[in-house]
Image 1 (cartoon, rainbow, N blue to C red):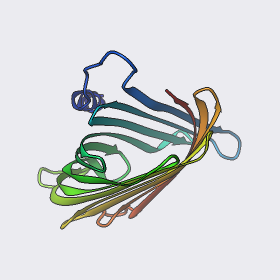
Image 2 (cartoon, rainbow, N blue to C red; image 1 turned 30 degrees about the vertical axis):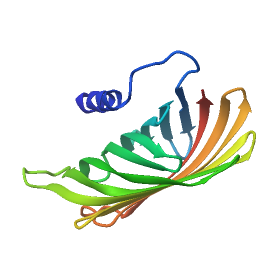
Image 3 (cartoon, one colour; image 1 turned 90 degrees about the horizontal axis):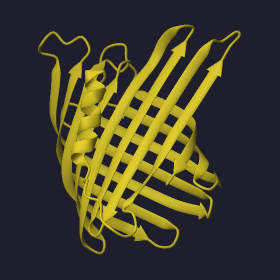
Length: 238
């Protein structure tokens, strides 16, 4: 519980809090997915995600929260919490500076936590009526602590962060998005890819299908390199 409180405080601390008159600078998504099965297989899975965006003039802040909990036959088989915040400042029509910070707590990854901070340069490669494509690069720092930590099992690494975010509005009610981030370090490299399609059903309510792959080059014993996750969630956009 203390760790979750710290995550919430981190997200709130990093986000701008000054609201201005006129059109609202706030937008975002709230997602919820639930799957339950009984009979030969007794399993329950709950996923909840939220994205909050604040944008005013040259500033843009994006806060993100993700959680996944899965229980099979009364035994917890997945428990993951992730929070991230990205602040950017556009200094010319297609160029900007960014600061990124994230915290991940995956109870089945072999790590107690993995924290990352990075800053650098970004460029908008494509911008038209239906497509947006941003790419970023910059130095950073990552700290991770193993679950079986006896006092010395802490990984610290200088990293180079490379990220890409592509969004394509296929129609007025359907949006395709591809996010890719690579945090490359001398000790470890973590890559994360998220592919999603979101459709609007009525008003701000819709359906989202997403496929996430997270690959870690150096993992603790008895852990796999690639974590894969497919989610179908009900989403509300505002």
